[in-house]
Length: 111
Length: 179
Image (cartoon, rainbow over all chains, first blue to last red; front, side, top):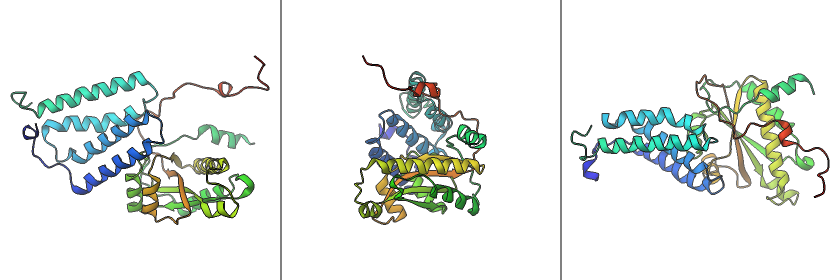
């Protein structure tokens, strides 16, 4: 699978460490916070990773990444509407699946 | 209580998006002066306030604070000083300490609003990481950040309410009836 993906380097070491900091501290504070904050932290990490790699990402990913940056902050505000939140997450799952397909030899032209 | 104070309480909002416009030193000092007047259990005043304006320090704090969505020009960290607790034989689990943090936070946010500035509290951060980044004295426990700055113009909606409530929904008058 890894061979099928682009070998384009998109993340600098500093950016990767910053993302690690977010993930590690999120894991710790989640132990003291409501369960529904879990998706929130994962989405925050998604948004920050998308922002970090957007500039160097290929055209196959760019639209998906830009969408995350624009969509996720609004999704946070919908946490109290569980149905809308789940709908938003489902849409994000569809978008990431489409992005994976664009990077996969499963799709003939990779587009 | 004057209508001005009530209006200030009614119109304050938690702000998650701020500009990078700096906050005047005089305004920061007024906010801290207001915090000094916040009620404190037993008048012990265990709270200490750390003001962070340095951009690189603020950046590092944000990196270990998943709940800090603001890029605020000023952070005020409310700490509890354990030395004060020891001095008065108070356990660190004493509920009065939480109340002190709450009264200080609300006083800071209302004072900030009164000065035409925006604020937002943040408790979702790693205490241990913040201690390291700020090189806090061993007796200081970092309890809550208040982000302070100027509200950014945004088209984003605020946090949707879990449930629409009025004060009546939260209040019961007098003794509860027997079953």
